[in-house]
Image (tube, rainbow, N blue to C red; front, side):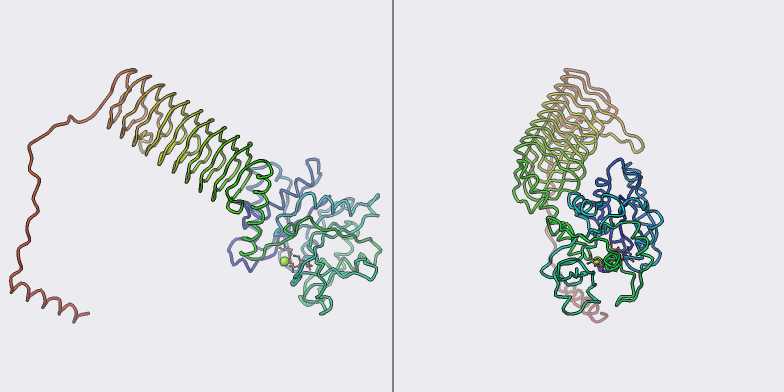
Length: 491
Ligand code: UD1
Ligand code: MG
């Protein structure tokens, strides 16, 4: 099947420098939602990939397609054609015409209608199927709306067959009362489409080449027209303004929340979760309010995520508790670990089972083995930390010398006193203890107490005493008033 995505329109109402189809829903450009579904629908064996008609912001949209194909090989199949001037939906499709395979039907999608499901499109494609390509029907995805204002109306004959589509601006007051609208999504027989598109005229209220005019042409040519509707209204909703985008975002998020709950996840409030990517959860996971999940996140069975956590591209093990306001990115957390509140795990943080990372602790590119703890105010970077290690409050690995990064190795059963600085590269031997306040610049031997600290002394000493202010003389007071008056006068 040929798939053409119309995406050349301006999207004036967004009032944005970004082309409308690159505005994001669930962290992903609208166009990418459409392309993901289109690629899924076409399947791996498809000869040709989706064609995107670009116009407004064409350079930005092409740049997006380039980056997408570098990150995901599926997108290499996607191509773009330019519609230099936006003369209507029919004119847009005309630009893609030379690339269409006439032996296959053509599915038309809109770049700003992001949530149409594969199921709905499969149903539509089936409806258009003929035994032979020349028997194919024209299949329209329609929708019944309580308020159809602004949309093209589906005009039917007395027998119920579709006669034509009339745009709002060209409709009679009687036609405006029709509640069945054209979603714009349709499947057309390509060999006829070629002929119809070339015959389009812009003789209408908007002076545009309407794709919708091909419906009447199909009727005239005796091509059967069939219609179907999506399961849910949001599937065919287009985005024109920021409020519509925000509304659709909530619909989409609620849908994802419901899928999670059906799979056995507890959400404190399904209206207060944001998944911008994929979130896989085991049974009995609990997620409190205000959490954001980005990229690919896995939460294993029994994990609890406190309020307002942000978790991106991470794997969280069984029975982990993540306390509020924690920020986890590119990390792996072993079973039964305790994280936060206010913890920050950065890329390469790899924690084994039963690790405790407490408040205001940052871990980056470090492996921490089982049963180790860093409970307060620490930075662990570029480190390998053994088992049963205790990292005291305020400990910092000084991994960066201003030019290069260096590694810190802390072996099993080490105890690090508070406010210690480990100047990397440095190694703390198994079972060593570092005294509080140590600045470690050389390796610490195993099983010994290492401490670097100025010697503590006590002196007899008198605290300075606050001096009494001298009472102001009459002369000085008069002078002060005079100066203030002159400042006021100058102002
Ligand atoms: C279109 C349909 C209308 C339908 C409505 C559904 C026509 C004539 N009308 O109207 O029946 O109810 O969508 O939302 O088809 N585009 C281009 N190039 C252009 C013009 C548009 O690529 O020259 C793209 C837009 O980027 C958008 C899509 O086509 O993705 C629809 O364009 P839009 O201007 O929104 O059409 P409507 O007037 O809403
Ligand atoms: Mg529109």
